[in-house]
Structures are given as C-alpha cells and as structure tokens.
Length: 243
Image (tube, rainbow, N blue to C red; front, side, top):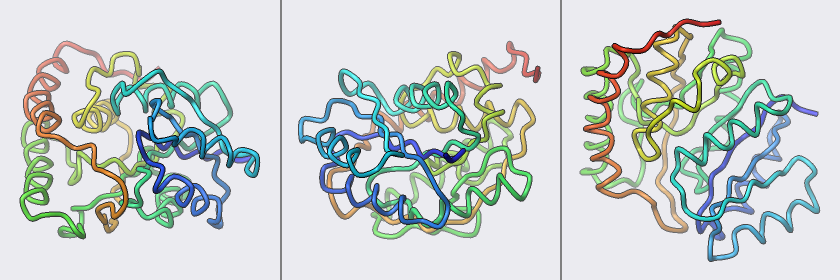
C-alpha cells in the first residue's frame, strides 16, 4: 500500500487517459490514482475500468455529469480522506503537467517541510510551452493580481499541479470552499495560507495539451477576477485557527 494518491479529473479525455495512467504507475515512487469521471460521452470511464483489471491501485469515482473542476476535487479529497493517504496530488489528464514532477512535489512535502507543494509556472520566470501569448499573459497577471489583492506570497496562484498533505485537507473545512471553476485553485491556496501552513513552490515547465480539447473559457477567468475580491472580503469575517 502507498500513502500517495493522484487525483485526475476527467471529461472527454479518451486520447490521454490510458497514457497518463501508465506513466504515473511507471514512476519510482508508488502512487495510487483516483479518476474523478464526470460521465464523459467519449467513453473515458470504460477505458479506466478496463485498466482497473491490470492495476489494483487505480480507482474511479463516477459522477452524474460535468459538475465543475472544484467539486470534482472536493469529492476526490473527501474520498481520499476516508482512506489512508497522507499525500494527495492534483494533476491534469492531458500531460500539461509532467508526471515526473510528482516526485519533486512529494519531496517538497515529505522531506522539505512543505504542507502544500505547488508545481509553479512562474516562480522562476515564465515556464509555459505552446500557449498563445495572450493566454500566457492572462494567466501570469492573474497570479500577480491575486498576490496584490490577497497579500499571499504565491507566484502561481492558479496552478493546478499540487500536493496537499493530509493535515491541510483535514483542517481547511472543504465544505466552505465556494468556487467550482478557475477560482477554486486560488481559494484552496488562500485558505491554506490563512491557516498558516507552509507553502513551497516547485518550478515546473507547463506544456499545453496536444490531444483532446481544453476546458478553459472566458467565464472561468471572470469568476477568478471577481471571486478573489469576494474571497478576500469574506476572510475578514472568518477565523482561521488550527485545531
């Protein structure tokens, strides 16, 4: 048994899902994988279930439809907390996150004192490959905006390649996380920071997907822009005290 699990949310990822699963299971550290599957019409779930015959460490949590990235991770976190995992990772299915970097995120938490490790695109310059310049600038300045509004010293507040320790997920009251889209990632980091946990940013190179279709939209960015202000205002009326 392993105490590490990688949560991968999926919706129409048939082109990538088998390859990403096999890659994670080939790493030097043993990881379990939880696929949070939102009833993809392209047959993603069937591919995962077929692979479960080969891999005992592969799990699937099926949901009734496309309910949002944030709720996918919240459901995944709760599933993991009911079990024995001490390190819970977020990762995309499309290889924009290099699975090899899971080992570096694990090291940051297991050996270097991190409570939350972020695979950061911007902690050492701008490390993004194959994105249009407009999207790079939007993402980069979104993180700058979050730093300005919240005071949180994180360079890549919107990152989705992450390792949480169990104690963070047990502490931050997952049912109080409000956002379900792009701002979810910001709110999780902000709440972790407000509780005083140690956050480490690990530099990574982000490479845009080559297979499948991006789920990003303008509405997701709008949620982040206005959501950050609301989140900051709400924080004044909430106590962040560890048990």
